[in-house]
Amino acid sequence: MTVLLTADEVTLSVAEYRPVYVNGDVAKPGQQTFRAGLNVRQALALAGEYDVMRFRAKDPFLESADLRSEYISLWTDFAREQIRISHAAGRASEQRPARSSRSREDSGPRLRNLGP
Image (cartoon, rainbow, N blue to C red; front, side, top):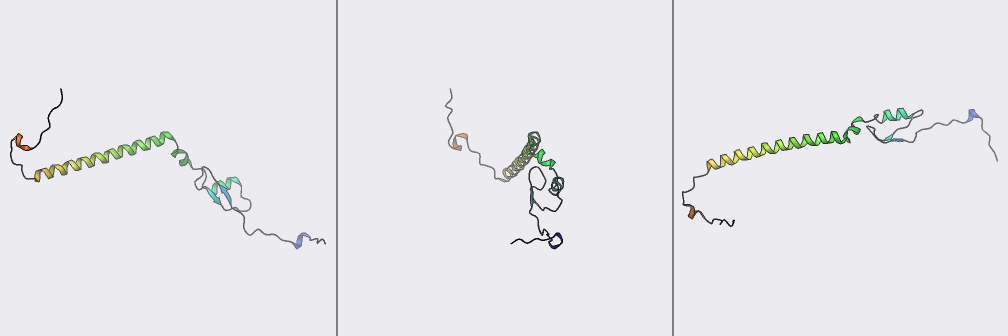
């Protein structure tokens, strides 16, 4: 049995399109909503266009500069902390009671020089 339909008897509407995926060097890679008439340029625009910073982050010269800057910053922090510790140790030694004056022989065990 065959049923013939004319064009004015059938209407088709798409309720929802499947998503498209835009991957690679874009700001927001992944799933994008597809709509009728969507072209590649529009899909790229939805994904945030090309991500220039993504290219720069992988540039070894820029990474080297960033690492060098971080290295210097950490050394500066280390030096500040060493100075703070040194000042604290100096203040602590000023507050200690003076040692009794004993002769060098009475001050405890000494190491012998075993050198030539």
